[in-house]
Length: 308
View 1 (cartoon, rainbow, N blue to C red):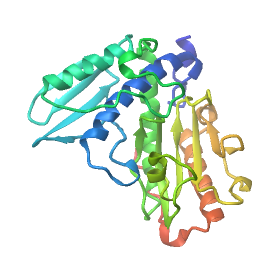
View 2 (view 1 turned 90 degrees about the horizontal axis):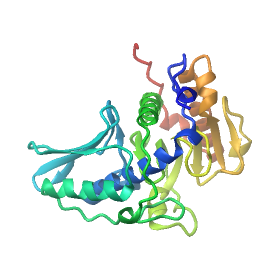
View 3 (view 1 turned 45 degrees about the horizontal axis):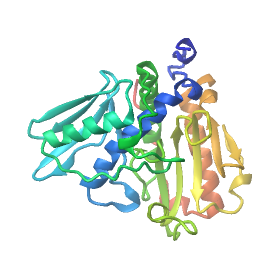
View 4 (view 1 turned 180 degrees about the horizontal axis):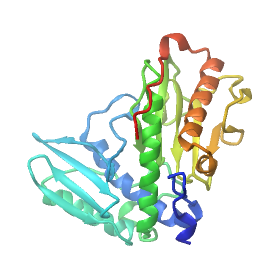
């Protein structure tokens, strides 16, 4: 099983959802716990840009969050497998990342915050998942495969670099490249500048996220019922004719209502980075053309990739 998830000559490691889904599900809940800390401590930004996590050299981080004249940063270190909580003025606490229940992790994390003098109100109910169980009662999810988590981080670093380069080709309003702990996916979102009003009968989260026309692209590890790691691109609202546009590589998935490029196809490509860039550029163009975006005003040349 370990060999099946080993790295490849492309440098993009294999990440089989069926092999590590239990670990991914547990890790998802842990990122939600930490992410809700960021939600509580940071002022609200448009489209919830104050709540995601960011890829770091060691894992995923909240970045610095203000706390009573100091700052708190919480980082998942997927190299030494600890969650590190550090204050700007020197206080540090660690929570070990290992096989144990979400409930146990949650209790130790809350204790670590308290020992640093940080008071955070966290709603203990997971979001954007089927059949959510409160963090403090979740004893079923208790997996942690170190090797799988390290592969996950390796992929995140690769995807982070490509999404950031792709972002250089847009001079309109654009999100940071960020990891949403609710949906457990990694993305960047472009905006036309036109108000959209959000999807019909949406909850408060979606109304804010989709208040303006967007084309969003990113990567998920296989969660949400899809069962395979994949890159995606969607538009909200979906413009008429977008589904019929040709993209390369990848294809429209009618069930999901978005373009999909399977991660395994990227790994087997002669140049995985070029394959992902081709997908990102062609799917964006498909959505922007179908929606009638002013591409001349919004775009600029994509920056040359740095050496290495």
